[in-house]
Image (cartoon, rainbow, N blue to C red; front, side):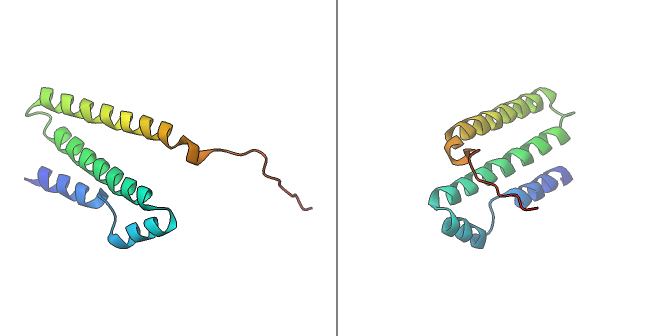
Length: 103
């Protein structure tokens, strides 16, 4: 049906980037960030496509749709919270950077 085809198109649009982008991520950062990029974009693409499909077929099975959407939203929330806690050390803000103002 059109709903499942559009859901598939959403997945293809959002899933992990091409090999050349992954090579640049690996070269500029490291293997861990390349793997995180693949994992995160695949999880996000799969979640968005499932949420779209469940919303588009909501009238056929509302209980199943609501429960799947809530489970996916809660899982994404937990993943984001855990990743911000785990990777907080990479995003420290420093207030002691000297700034020279020229007039």
